[in-house]
Image 1: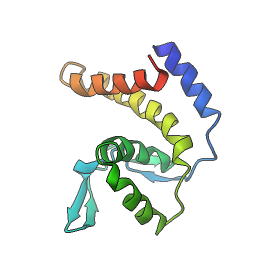
Image 2: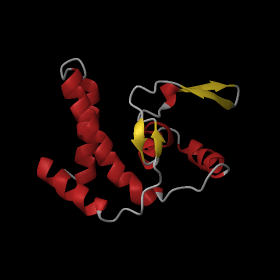
Image 3: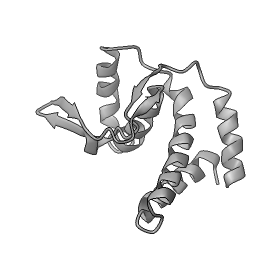
Length: 134
């Protein structure tokens, strides 16, 4: 599976558009880190993993943890995003960043303890398997 992931990574890396950025990316942009009051975002928390990079990476968890769970949220999210700045070519960048994020999560589990993070590890192995059709 590792070799298939590397081949797929190389394949989709070469098809990426120019990156958006540079900027500060959250790296853990998911529902648990978004504070909502009424019908508006009141704040974003947990910047432990934040770093410089391209904003595309933050859409990986938005896609997986929000849009895939509740598809009705995608259009309002994109409309709100486009009211601030142009939308990215998500169909081109998400396959790459899904693999990138899943690999990063596997390393995170190794560094923080595979046994105690087994569920998260397995979730990301599934993402890698799905990314390469394994």
